[in-house]
Image (tube, rainbow, N blue to C red; front, top):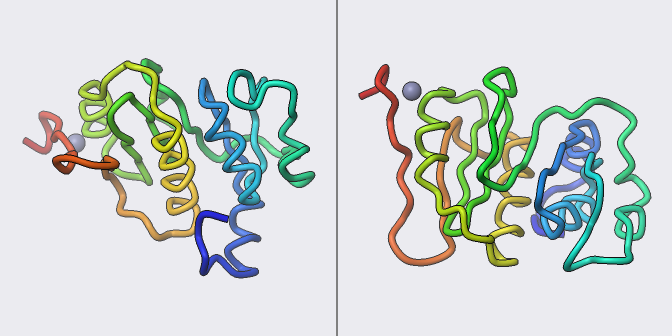
Length: 156
Ligand SMILES: [Zn+2]
């Protein structure tokens, strides 16, 4: 849905990578509609009354999450190699990149509620990670100045 050239192989990759979504109902709905099995409690708020199965019957996960997409503030586990953080002003993603750099960049995100478009961007970031289209570490913003990755002590 978000990515035109996903194709059959891409859909298989998305299906094979269940995702835990925390605090982001719009992100959960976008991911489910795009073919990712989603672990989440609810689609409260924006999608109140609908369940993820309404968006895609394949969205019901049959395996443990391969990674997570979470709204900040959130304690991201270091052993989760695939992670996306959504803040009020941007998205930070990690695809095997340095955990220290990831955490430092995530801490700089605004904790205000993310606008709907930013939740959608979080979904897109997850899909790009799973499809192998993303850098190992990166930060995205919808508009304004680009968001840069802040380097940790080891990478100063
Ligand atoms: Zn680092």
